[in-house]
Length: 89
Image (tube, rainbow, N blue to C red; front, side, top):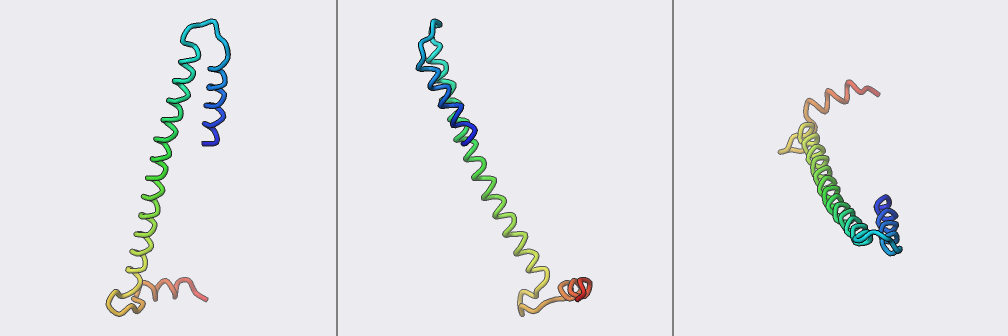
């Protein structure tokens, strides 16, 4: 948004200036609107990627915990014991 904002403002300001060519201002306004539309579509993609990443990391954390603790008793299993011995004091 920080990169697109000044560009769109500059294009809209340029569209308000007098030009000898026909449709010049209208095309700049149209291009500014297209840039804004693409920016909002990209924000939706970023939101989706963030949600997917959070879900992936949460699942990874949960699976790592399930791999190291017995689900019935909640006690540590052999994998956690082996990791504790390898890590040392």
